[in-house]
Every structure is written in C-alpha cells, then in structure tokens.
Image 1 (cartoon, one colour):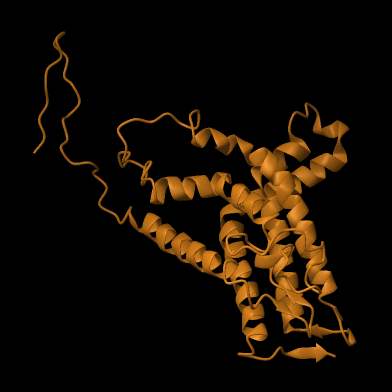
Image 2 (cartoon, rainbow, N blue to C red; image 1 turned 180 degrees about the horizontal axis):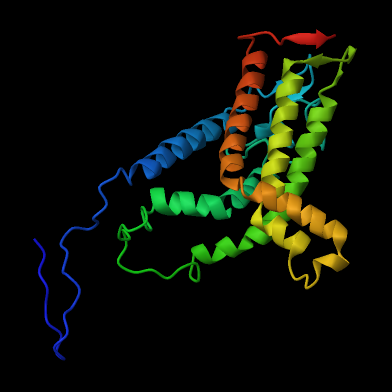
Length: 268
C-alpha cells in the first residue's frame, strides 16, 4: 500500500513508497557478474605476479605480459630486456616499473569506474535503485579525486603497449633462429587487443579530436577520431576481452614453462 499526503498549499505530494525500488527484473545480476569476474581476475593476477616463476620460455623467447619488462635481480638474464635494476625482494613484482601504471590506467578507466562503482560500492547498484551510501561527493574528494589522473595514465599505457609489442616481436627470434608457434599467435592476439582497448580510451578520443572547431581543416585527425570513436563504442567489450587475453597469454606461457604442455610449432 502507498499513501499520499497533502501539501501546505493544498496540492498533493508524490506517493510515499516504502520499497527501495519498484524494479522487478534481476537488476542485481550485472553487478554480481562484475564482482565475480573482476574478483576472479584480480585474484589470479595477484597470485601470478607474486609467484616469481613460470614467466619465461627460453626455448621460444616467450615472456608473459604479467612480467614485462622483467627488471628485478631474480629475472632470467635473457628475459630482462631492459636490465635488472631492482632488488629481488619478494614484495617487489618483477614488472614493478609497469604494473602500477597499468593498475592506474585500468582503475581510472571510465568503464571500470562504472563497473566497480555499481558492483563493489553499490553507488548506485543499478538504475532506479537507491545508492548504498547516505552521502555522495562525486570525484572531488580523496581518494576519488585521483580518478582525474586517467588522462595521464593513458600515455603510460601507450608506452606499455609498445613494450608488449616489442616482446611479441622478439618472440619470433628463438635461440635456433626464426620461429613461429601457437604462442606467437597468442602473444600477437593479445597485443592487438591491448592496442584496441588502449586507443579506444576516452582520453585518446579527446586527444585526437578534442578542441577542434573545424574538422574540415584537420582531415587526418578527423579520420583518426572517427576510427577511435568506433572503437570507443566497444570500449566495454574491449575492457573485458583484454582481461581474458592477458590471462590466457599468461596461463599458456606458465603452462609451457612448467612443462605441463608443449608449444604447437609451425616453423622451427
């Protein structure tokens, strides 16, 4: 039952509804899937990063992106393409130079903000469902004010994508010369998806086309802006796909290095 009240001036107020929401569909299901999916990936990635093993297949020059660039003293010399400059303390990830920036880029991503705001913080959990918090200050206070660093994290993500591309190219150069196997296909596929996700970023779209008053005077930037805009429409899908390709690439290289399976070779 609902009740109505009369305003002081004689008008009628809106109905007082006791229920938190009138939605009868499974509005909570997308948030549940996000919690399970992101939770599982973060757990897997954290365990792998601090395992400090099964990251480099010397026979085929495969390096997992979770350990790239490998810069601690425990890294295999052949895998340390940029030198071993950090101590081998357990708490330091082998890719300590890049992982913080990747985490910053993903955490401040516009899609991921929506995903974990709704699922983990319930702010709000769904449309037409009340916020799980009594007050809301937006992204103007600590710690959410740091979400504005996304535009700068994008440039770091571009550099890291270049490094991952370099790793994929080096993987064709095995100790026995040029080689090509299933691992190369997986590494290349992961790199392509990472680039698609990176340049589909809203910050990239603004960089290539923002603040232009006349696209007709900048035809090249307009074409690139159009291309980025098309990718941007798939930013959510690319965000999830790249989580999958990263995990698949890492698991495949781990399985090879642990000698659980053998690489399917096409050449050499």
